[in-house]
Length: 123
Image (cartoon, rainbow, N blue to C red):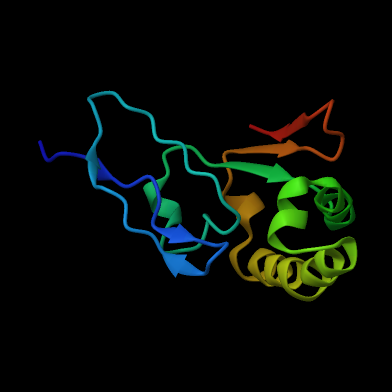
């Protein structure tokens, strides 16, 4: 049986650059959890045994982003965050939803509009 190899990072979005991280070997019966926005793309989707989609309205995603320190550190002030979401992140996700339809490919969908009360809507 071939070894299952993995790397914990390959790209640093903050610096828009590749990351050199050591290749590691997974121990038997390991579970790998991948988290990301565009993971249901056709070149990736067949690698996942279980696909969970976290569903949230764009308006709520923006409201939460405006409150997070990570966005302020990476993007800047509230105006810059809002501009980045409205001009790049949300339009990119809308294209992704139209072309890829991740909800259709998901085994489980969790509506997370109410952060304290997520609701499983599929699966």
